[in-house]
Amino acid sequence: MSVVKINVLTVPAEQRETLEQRFAARAGAVEGSDGFEWFELLRPVEGTDTYLVYTRWRSEEDFQRWMAGRAQAAHGGAEGEKPRPAATDATLWSFEVVQQAAPRQD
Image: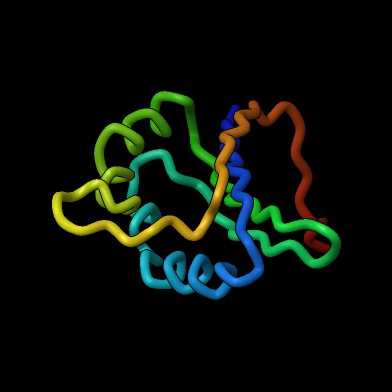
């Protein structure tokens, strides 16, 4: 079964637009990666400053390969001046998909 990685980002209100623009600018950075299945950036709507970055992978190995390679470039790992992070804190949650459902095709 697939694995899900959720990056939990604490983003102050004044940095929300910056974070969203950075994700929009990197669109396509992960989509061509072997084993990549899904991405969503989830904006908080009430009472929290926590964004969720949801990715789904075919396997833990596929995710680790991406982290070791292309993720470095996607997250500013290249040499040179790096912009200040928009998030003040980040935590990575990991899950295995044990059940799933999709809409019925009637």
